Length: 192
Ligand SMILES: [Zn+2]
Ligand SMILES: [Zn+2]
Image 1: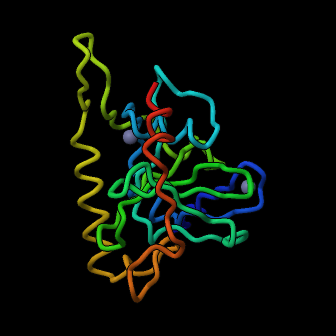
Image 2 (image 1 turned 60 degrees about the vertical axis):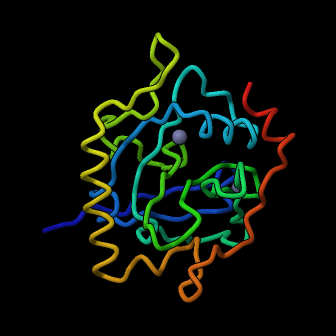
């Protein structure tokens, strides 16, 4: 059986390149996130304002990611001391992926725009934090995301693969670079 090729990605300037394994691609969940943090991160990195639209992500296990070139440009930002890690390529400020602060929970929301073959991501399976007319936010069609997450976490944990990612040291499970936490003032400016 011929397997699908890996999904390649690159930063905006093409210095940092890599791929998501075909297995990772198969188990990924194509999602849209309307949350204020995802928008704030896009603004921080000088990307076009996604609002009122979402940020499109491909949810995968981080151990399915390999960086082939430009790994020295990998950096991480956090909107608050306990916030998610927003990984980006500092050569061109392109956001790449969002992960928890620890390798122990194998989740990454990979920025779909950075993936070359967008058609391979399939249709949007789930939408998070969708704005409602009453001003609140609601998750739509959460079950594919939940099932996908569970399948990926089980696979990563059973194989031990969760320890080997480009983002975390395989022994200390700490981020490979010290995440930069932005100041309260910087943060305030990103939530218009
Ligand atoms: Zn770049
Ligand atoms: Zn979000």
